[in-house]
Length: 396
Image 1 (cartoon, rainbow, N blue to C red):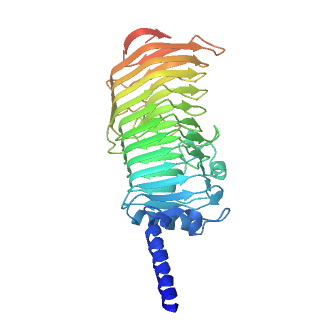
Image 2 (tube, one colour; image 1 turned 60 degrees about the vertical axis):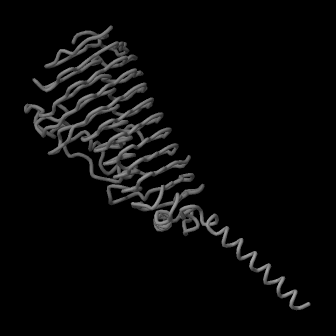
């Protein structure tokens, strides 16, 4: 009888052990990682180490690695979430990550050298930029320029990425920076900072290929979308911008050895009470660069100052010499189906340097003037654009 009981007990233990072994991978989660609270993160406490540890475990495991920020507000200093990883990576932001008042590096949450990355959720990256903005009031309006401060979210050398659903709030610097990355989609995002916050570009793209920005709401203190050198095959679709400085290619020509910007489509966007509309800007008295294949279409302007701009004399006060020509070359740039209202008379301003612009087109433009002094004007310097359909105001 005792032998039977012992055999029965042993058999039961073996079954339990077998089930535990079979279930272990599921308990750990495919690819490792998991909720940052399992790695020591606590609401209200610095969670940088927990986030980094969760990422490293997920990155090192085979399969899809997942890091989750749950409901709650978690403080964190700068974190670098780097690859290469063994598999696809997912970063689920459900709660809020909150930055310190001062961050000494150029990036706060940085993803680097990751292939197949998804950042998604309904959570918030709160940069707490107010103190930093107060320390350099009006810096973007002067030659002093703004201090290099922390960007809320950096994607550096990322291949095949999706950023979806999250909110970027009050970044100290740019909200989202995409650098040297390929095949990136940013969609259904909310980007928010006060109109007076300096240098808080919503999304900046540079040295990247195949980036798509779609269905994004941006209200900030600088360009809603800005484009730097060596950017190609960029699509900006159905973006709502305002407040802000508009959607801008450039500024170009500020640094040596800038590479061309090619193939940019801005379509179906709405700009509301922004300081500028859609523009291409380059520095005089600096360095060479090229931009081509830039097409703005089906854009709605609602009380937008300076709706259509090519400015080859972009120069904050004292930042350069406005008597020296720009070395930037612009070609194949079109503005089509741009309609709405502006409170300023400079509705269309295409200011090229002699010999610097070719194949510039205006088509189906209708901008109504709502300001106290008018009428609105179209002013073109050193270029005669190709006109198609009705262009209002006329003048170029």
